[in-house]
Image (cartoon, rainbow over the protein chains, first blue to last red):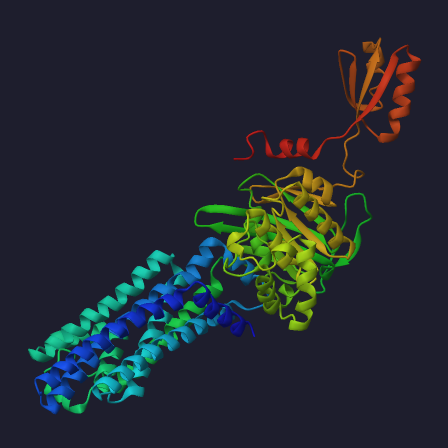
Length: 276
Length: 323
């Protein structure tokens, strides 16, 4: 019961504090800009009588670029909106009136987590869905395995949410934000090192990337999502800057799921045992 | 939970009381934050149905103690029981209300929404809440502001809505941490009335306040806390622990007369026309007056001297405020 009360209030908080609406407005601006670019591109294709195969591949590349931007927005949205919910309420004393109610602390934390999961699910679904609708109607292109791609981006966001909660159970808002973003940055850089290692065939560079993914698997989930959403042809040609040269395995996805559960477990354990 | 122990009020016959008869019971409670000892050794018994005051200087460990009773802060050592269950127990919290010192909550809510949310956390049904919320808003004087957002609320209004949420579940035990902070005189009167109403319905109230007047008016007993220890508990019903001090305005007092009072008094001081005596027993006062008048003294006035809570507080804490 306590979980759903807290989940409801957390979701409503995002809506009432205009957090969700501002993010969606920014997302709508992004989609409008993307649509405009797509429109001019399509017009140019017609004027220059571009080969349908090239048209399709360029539009697919634009879609992947859009998804890449959506992924970055989702990462920022996840960390920035959730980082203050725990540490901020502990610092301000707001949590005292909640934690003295007959609801175990784990339910308070899990409720808040569920509220953010709901909000982020809606945000990612709208952004990924909106982008695909645009490219479908304007260029006849959609993501290759859309559902798998969406679920992987969603999972990346939930991994980051759980890590942010774990940090916030220990540290202040600012420290938690820096830590969560820092960990994602580490994974991001590690991912690119791994990609370059694959191009230059440097196994040690690839290993650095794998270790970074083990420390924070968020970027690995995006790369797998990008791989799933691009056509097999685009993936094999390797001419897109978003082509995935080293595809994170199924084991890495399972590991990310395990990582998510452990991060959430750490957050719950620490929040249940700390002084408020 | 049904352990028995010996317990007695000052001036009462010691009797056998079960631990579940106490609203709050602590034994050697201690809390250390890093190298700082916030609560040294708190042993306290608060029977059910009492309005109990918690007095002490800043940093004495009052708020930390309250947080330990509520399970917000975990003790380093010692035991605490609330309503016969371990402090922090979820079941015990069903019958506990708490107004934190600086009540803060999501300011995007309206008072009605805030009370609904807290009511749901207490597990109160929607039907019951529909009846209770308007009554509580009336009680704390916020009915005209029921649809206003909390971000437009003053500090005093926050205290009022905080008090309302502390009473939502008809608690058996209510912790009020500086409840009159930020309130105008009418608001303070409202808090006193609420405390009285809660006592009348049998609830226990722990009042943590630095306003001695509030404590004196509202509480049955008070504990003085210094450096995380109970230095003294004192009944405030005017009977038990008053010192038997009287001031007598009189003339023609001689040293012989004072020597003759040695059997009846513990101390005597004569300055100007004022003779201040500490009696060995309250009923020795008529004998003292007879002795003085019989030996030729002129008695103009006999004034009982009550040691005020403030005097006692300053005696215990010291003029430096314990800082």
